[in-house]
Length: 125
Image (cartoon, rainbow, N blue to C red; front, side, top):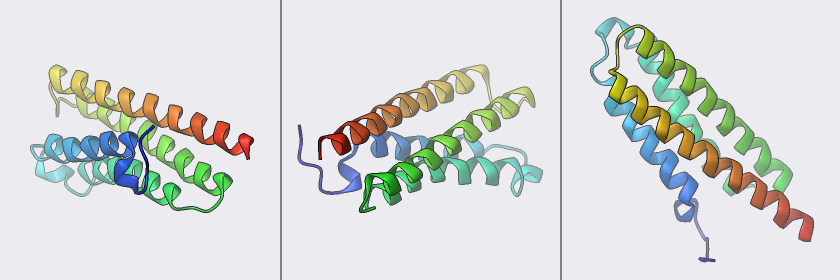
């Protein structure tokens, strides 16, 4: 296992960061009237996924870390719904919906695996 010294070493953070960048690209073409609505919400949710991984990484206790990873998971679920609404409103193509769903699912699987590894590691102490 690689030596993890920074949140940037976490594959789950790397994927969450990619997701945030993707959401910024995806929402760039949304209608201007959505700038302070759906665009803002989606971007904040996507950033929250990565930000809470960062915050959780530096917490001293596993219990504290898990609280932030849980928030990250909740933000990811929020983003999934916002993507669904965007598709229903015709703001994104079926191809972009599929790609975004694949990205969110990948981050979800990785985040849940990370959470399980932290729980397992904490029980060994």
